[in-house]
Image 1: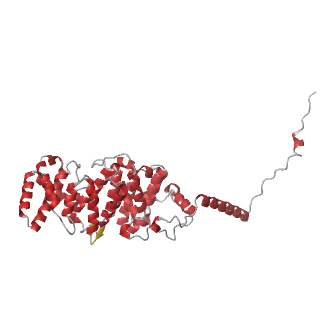
Image 2 (image 1 turned 90 degrees about the vertical axis):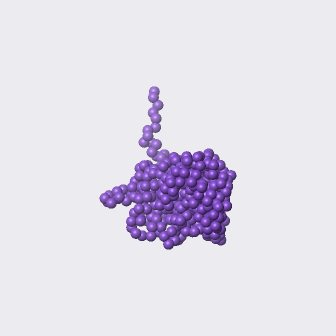
Image 3 (image 1 turned 60 degrees about the vertical axis):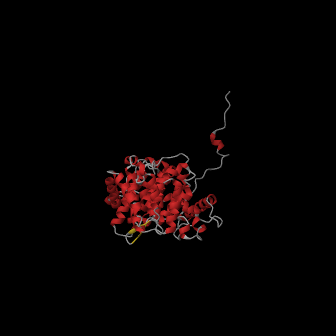
Length: 417
């Protein structure tokens, strides 16, 4: 006989009745949302605690320093800056172009560089070359508007947009890869970062590249990312007065970079820093007429850091252009030592140009002090160079027209100098 089992209906007496929750009214929905929001903020505050007075931001720690003695710092936060750490964290996420991008239907949207940039980022199509083009386009539009360009750059947020993309794409952690890309990425980005108060981040990048252990060779054909970054910083720091540029702040920037990188001890950065230093040395001597006379202390500091870089022709030429006490001794000695290398320098046109410039500047100085004998010797040296003099003069004239160091290394290979 088959035993009967208890029917399912009889089990209902043992189970509690199931009641679906009633819909919430507006007041109850609002209370639930506030409760969830409060709990969410509480947990985020726990994970991202508030800054304490023991951990002052760098702009407070260095507030007692003189402006010329401290590095380029991030400005103090304003009242418009979110105070809660969680709000700053969420704001950084939600303001990223990957999340803020919205499709626009207006025909003008296609001409807006910000729209093009955000579209490329959201679709994963952004590259360093395109980012450089975006920055160039924004700058061109700001100049065309006839406004205060620096102020407009600061308000544009274009630099921060690119930095956020670099952070998300991983490029910020692999800055060295920019050595393989022939694009004015840093040259276009650094001016926007300075205008937007991101100087501290720029120096963080310098230190990060300086921490690389593998040696990169800096040449005219393949400049390193570190050289391009230092060159962009130096260019950005050029001041202007009455239509002429000054190099004082550029000197300070490279001296500060020297303190960070220590190229005299770090072989991995030696070549890149030396190339950037010689680039500024070229501006200070061959192109000296295009710039205001520098202050003696900053000029001396710049020359001093270069003495460990093994660049005797630069040091000799810089001493000849000292703003207060020009000295021709090292220049004359250098030319006496190189008198027998006229045949070798034919293969180094940029070096030949520098040597001709040094000889001409030295001759002018010797005429001022009345050393006729040495002037005659320099004239014989130029004669010995023969046909190379004409090409040297041509290069000098081109350099004075602004066509000198651009696109080629104006300091030569370093084999002779």
